Length: 455
Image 1 (cartoon, rainbow, N blue to C red):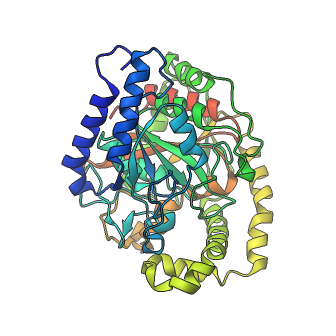
Image 2: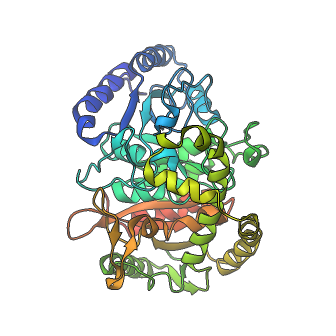
């Protein structure tokens, strides 16, 4: 567009044509804002002709159906909110508009973001662009599917237990959950207000860096982001450029959490992760096994808090409209009504101890590595998988390696790591130190260039 080889209007029409052609099978979009998007694209084209282009001028973007956009429905994937139209923009959406993005529409989420398969009885299941019989992950499954299908280059998502990184892994794209509070959440339907993160799904970390620079900063409506200080302009893109320019990985020290790979991890996933670690060492990185908080413990603490906070938020809606919830989400919310206050408070009090433990484990190390998912991609409707011959619910497996980093508030990325023997995506999770999102982007991009296959 900057070279005037493509106009914002042409790009939008290509985007809409791709939605019409692909979405009847993918079922990623739940609302298409065609008239509004066309008006925005025409205005973007005029600004580009006048030499007044803003950073995202004319770029199509999709929003997870938790983000308010003035005049558009925000259903959160639920019949409970059918017909609910937003009166104003969420803070992240306001910043996107201010930067010149063209908002194409809303994409699917698991109901109220309380699940990891994006299979909603209200909108129907979203399908994986790699293989439509398989889940795209969730709860930001529509965001990941729209990016993986090359409908939009970037989509907003949220992450409370892995809801950006899980679908990014399932759909073979980049997913980035920043440090807790870095992007404001006002105008976003909550799940667990002390663990919800706004983040990004994109085709590259360079795109993630650009959007992060534009979205981060204080949000008067979000106490967690009220005093958030943005990084210097261009610093995240500069970090990605440094990672890209590295000739090797010498000087990088990377943590491997002891015991995580031995606890219910598919052999194919484990072997791919080990091979990536060997490649990182061959490129000069030093890998250090560390005593990190156990993944099941972190996932349990995350779950207690999520159940209690989601149960509290939904209590009045359950009292009036319980029959409108899907069975799986209703069961979780009703369970949340039964969490004792002492258990919730203990999980919150332990957070400080877990953060200190994790920070000590990662002290003097640049990042921590794990697989994003311990299992290979499940099929839509699959309820169980069988690690070591024993059954485990698919949702429990999908969040086991991701949930803890929402509880801790650490930034984390998921990167495409090739495919399994069936041709479905595998992924690497790279975790950084809190408030060092730029350093995480630099390390992740270096690993992507030196260690990981390209999509």
